[in-house]
Amino acid sequence: MKTLFLLAGAFLLMQSLDLAEVRSAYKEAAHDSSKVEVFYKSLSAVTKDDNISLVAYKGAAIALKAKQAPTIKEKKAGFMEGVSLIEFAIAKEPNAIEPRFVRLGIQENTPKLLKYKEDIEEDKSMLLSEFKNINSSNLKGHIKDYILQSKVFTTEEKTVISKL
Image (cartoon, rainbow, N blue to C red; front, top):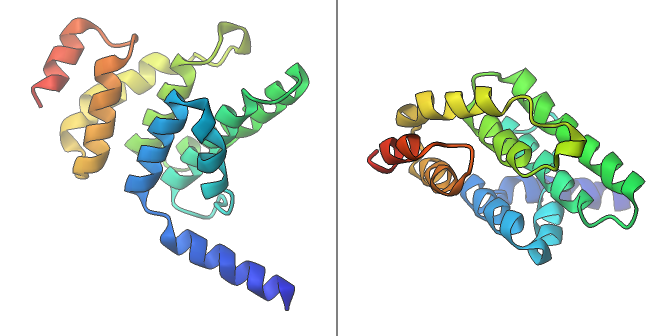
């Protein structure tokens, strides 16, 4: 009976996850470490069978939470777990823009010693080329905000995006 309630609760949680809210929570957690735990918990029921964008955000939540782990070993293990979900999302749907956006945000802000920066140019290029084709105004706004504050985009690229 307890298992039934847990499954029902997980199902209801998944039904209540709104991508617009998840995007906002991601942005807040990326800028405020006190909000990481709430972001992480909100995605705890997401599995690899769910919406690929949610899988990528769950990976980001795990990677962000790993920063707060008490030991280097735990930090690295958590980071690798999060990255594996982001990479899974991209492998499953390589042309999906949102997982690329998530990966770029994580790669740009990852210390060099973790050696997770190899796809920055590829993801950046995809965001720039596909930006005009994004249907969701909410997603477009989040990506635009990210590009305008990012250090990996040139002034010229930011100018073009700011006009779209």
